[in-house]
Image 1 (cartoon, helix red, strand yellow):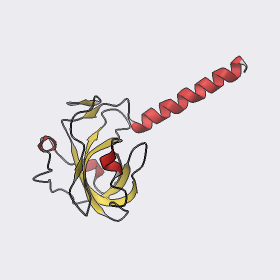
Image 2 (image 1 turned 30 degrees about the vertical axis):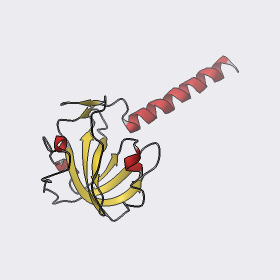
Image 3 (image 1 turned 45 degrees about the vertical axis):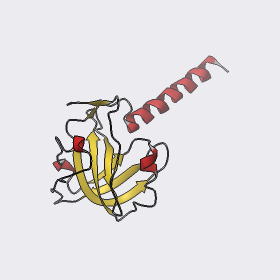
Image 4 (image 1 turned 180 degrees about the vertical axis):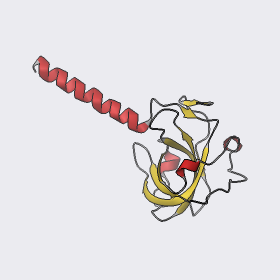
Length: 152
């Protein structure tokens, strides 16, 4: 293999890895002190590897905060992301089985609630920590991840 071809291959490999990291927010810092509560209708739902993703249209008037999420740690600092009201938002969930097992339970058109952490770094992805499907109890990922911080 020529040096030129080797360098081109390496550059392409690093470019793909950087794009994946930017999309998935692996290098991000997620603000655990200000969890975001969203209610909306599911546009798309994918519950496979490498991680689950749900896109919802956030309701314009979705301003009621839950009294109990089942996990007290999410109630402190819980708020709306007013900029999201009436928009389409993609939420990515950590790659854990409890989220993958939601396949078939959450479908386009369903009304769901989500608690997510916002990435402090652009493009400010949302990482879901709690999701309430229409047919049963909420599914939660408890505990801290190393990419979570208290405040941006």
